Length: 243
Image 1: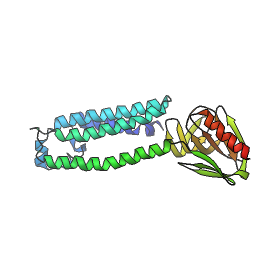
Image 2 (image 1 turned 180 degrees about the horizontal axis):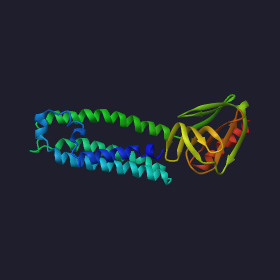
Image 3 (image 1 turned 120 degrees about the vertical axis):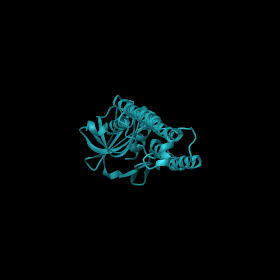
Image 4 (image 1 turned 180 degrees about the vertical axis):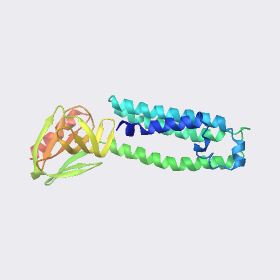
């Protein structure tokens, strides 16, 4: 399990060592596909040192994120991926400048390459950050006829007649892992495994109580809370009064 968690930083460090210290320049994307004429115009030793250092920096960012999440700073740990992406963009742009005369023979082509790379990455970044924005938006609970509905990411609905209990809790057991869901900082949405409870649906905006626990169909459950405790209590009252 530890090897899987640290697979990315370990791989980055190994690549950095191979490129910087063992001169395995064929591992550098772009350089390995360049013509012999182009390779002769590139200061490959400086390029190798630069790429190696960047790979070490990327590994450090990834390790920092893992450690921050391990010590409970999940939000800051997740945000390190933003720095990771910025470092990659910097590497792509800066990597175009390692020519012996300081001027690439195909400068126009290099600029086009950068534009193409960025044009691919930017939509991906927009999608990722849009997904994060959608994920961190608090789920809305409504009562629609005989249904209790949770709207938003990983929305769900439960028949009122299937509900066996509704209660407010100050604390919940440890969240052991994600089965199918979204987690960002202390926000958890989707199906998660809860210690001693098994798998259930979570719509959590905070790691602090109160938590609204809805049990239904005997063994299934939903956990809901908001950053503002009053909102959690209001949803509890709304559902309880309607039962």
